[in-house]
Image 1 (cartoon, rainbow, N blue to C red):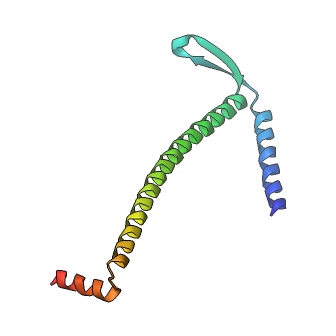
Image 2 (cartoon, rainbow, N blue to C red):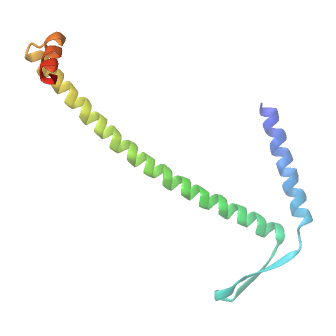
Amino acid sequence: MKLLKWIVVGLAAFVIVVFAVGNRQPVDISLFPFGVVATLPVFVLFFLSIILGVVISLFGSLWTKVKRIKHDRAYKKKIEALENELAAMRIERNLSGSTAVTVRNEYLKKAS
């Protein structure tokens, strides 16, 4: 499996190098409202746009993960509160001398 990984990484590196060597023509990039003009090779512009996309994607996934963590914390607090309530109800039931049969009978009486 490691060999396959290195083969894929090697092929990707080869493709990147071939792309960079084949696309060295300069391109003017103008930021219109600011009047800034930069001259970069095509491959640099291409890789910068890919890197920018990766960074934006990372921030988006980080935002989603933070929201999920907040929801998880809220659910854990709710679960803990419900478990405490259940434990208190069990203690109360055991102190009152109720058994499962009497609790069931009381439930059936209320239902009818």
